[in-house]
Amino acid sequence: MFTLMLKKLLSLVLQMKLYRIYYNKKSAKKYGWTPNWFGATKFDSYLIDRVIEFQKAHDLQPDGLVGELTYRRANTNKEAFSKSASRILCNGQFVSIDWPKVKIDLLKGGTYKEYDNHRTPNMIVTHWDVCLSAASCKRVLEKRNISTHFVIDNDGTIVQLLDCNNIGWHAGNRKVNSASIGIDFSNAYYTKYQKTYVERGHGERPVLTDSIVHGIKLKPHLGYYPQQIWAYKVLLEFLSSQYDIPLTCPTKKNKLVTDVYSPAVSGSYNGVVCHYHLTRKKIDTAGLELDKIINELNEPSSDLNN
Image (tube, rainbow, N blue to C red; front, top):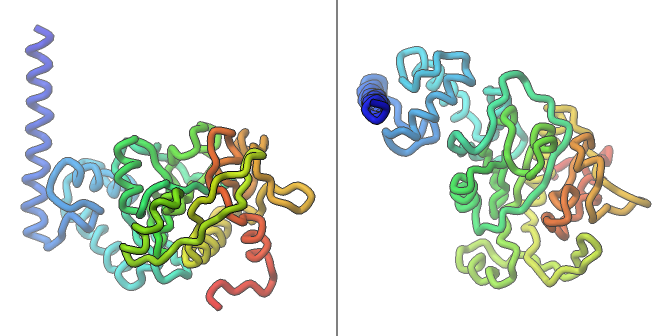
């Protein structure tokens, strides 16, 4: 009896899925939209999930069907976004950022937690993805069912993977996840990948030889392209202005702390940290001169575009 009921339920779920796919195909033909309007590539269940996320962000009925109202909202967003690629998604709305290369490529559902009200993060956690590109990073995150808000690609493109209002699963710490926004540098870390970067036309990465984390000197490893550092600075300033996150980092005697920092672990720290500040199990982002970056951002004459 139970097996029969389960089969009927699965059949209904499948029918609903097929109906939504059919409906959206007809809608696209009628209104002239394509799946990439919602961050998808084809008419499937992934597109349905993306549409539902869009509808929730815009106070529409989250049924996964692109009816007239959903289409109109999506078209308005598309027109607004096409005027300037330099926008970041915050609380379902596009906000301008003063950086020429921004791409929004949202992660699929199930890799993060949606937050119903406007979130007020107090901390930014910086990671590296140990991947060769932002696109590769996204694939890995979705396979592992984890997430970060941004990845800074090799050419300095800021790739947004989550609306800042959503809670990313990036820190391995529930309190920190709830209190923070995650930023990843695309960086494969190991020097053996230097040749691959060159072959792909990115040029050689800096090689860092003096990185110390948790009191241990690391073997030489790949550092950060200059364009990535510039993008990171702009993104920090943007997030600081949007969420009133102080542009500070853990220091002791005017030097960057490169070990676990207890206020960050508790999620109570107000500022910018590296992943290694949260646990001795992590070394990212070793070699990132976070204190220098923060000092430059706080200089009165700082102009990131000059």
